[in-house]
Image (cartoon, rainbow, N blue to C red):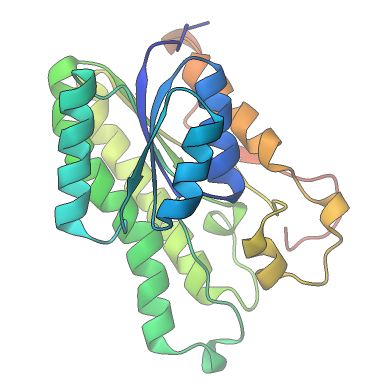
Length: 237
């Protein structure tokens, strides 16, 4: 198993839910985390409670901002070892009820943000000859679900980016992978599926452990993508 202590990481969507738990878990492992989100107040609270985390408020769809914060991270740490694209939003409902602008915004954040950060980080990772990119996708990116057309399309796009960039990055020693959880106990799932009992959902800690597992796995046992299912017969999670 690889020791990840001392490595540096950019993590998006870090202020709440999966991202917050991931930031805390990575910091506990000794990883130096640049925590990215739009809410500066929540990021400051995260940093005050955890050593090794630096806050950087940024909208993941701001191309200039993404390039700037990535360059700052690289200058501060002498490179970038890990990129985790976790930032995401969702628009839910029958297709006739979801505005096209909401569809575009969901695609821009979930797929576009992932694209921009990989575009900014990959040149340095390729020069290093090493690096890990993990995209937090969803089981919705592997299958189709009713009332989730915009969200599902964005997560399928994220999986397409993961698979494509993995082929570009592999010759340079950079690993590009995805984690695909089912329903996780976050604000997003409560909006998408208010009918579900939170106690039956995957916990954010479970997703964080899956990410740590992938980062610590030696090259001899590489995993391309890791689906995480909750213990349920519900076909829509």
